[in-house]
Length: 178
Image 1 (cartoon, rainbow, N blue to C red):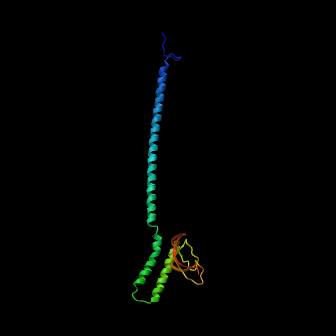
Image 2 (spheres, rainbow, N blue to C red; image 1 turned 60 degrees about the vertical axis):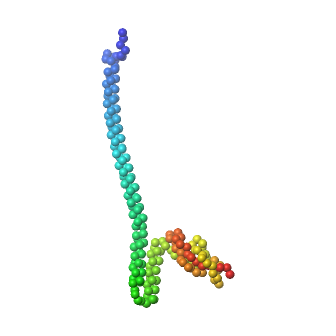
């Protein structure tokens, strides 16, 4: 009877050689799996660290934005403090010359307008200009001899523009047709 195991030229069965080869391959694969698992563990740790760092950056950004919102007006309000001081000094004067009080109020108003202008606020004072419905609100029409119809003849309340955006239209009276 013939043996079904093939034999190598040296007369030893090839099955043993395959087992040794398979064992070596298995050991190589185990080493490779261990390397990949270690690499996978390192990558997971890196991803977790990066995720934590992104979350920390998001929190810092949120905190910084909140601080910026809370203190956005700090410079403006700091600039307004001398105005408050001037008004308080003016109110504390018991007796005094009306002209001196008026002069103090005028200087205080000029300082307030300077600070407002430095922060982008511009007055809309359209006296003797044609009515601009984008910036003026006509509340009445009056007889105004010598004025063109639709011309602003009285400013009841000045308007204000902040950085090219209308905050409040000027309340005006305009000349009506003759």
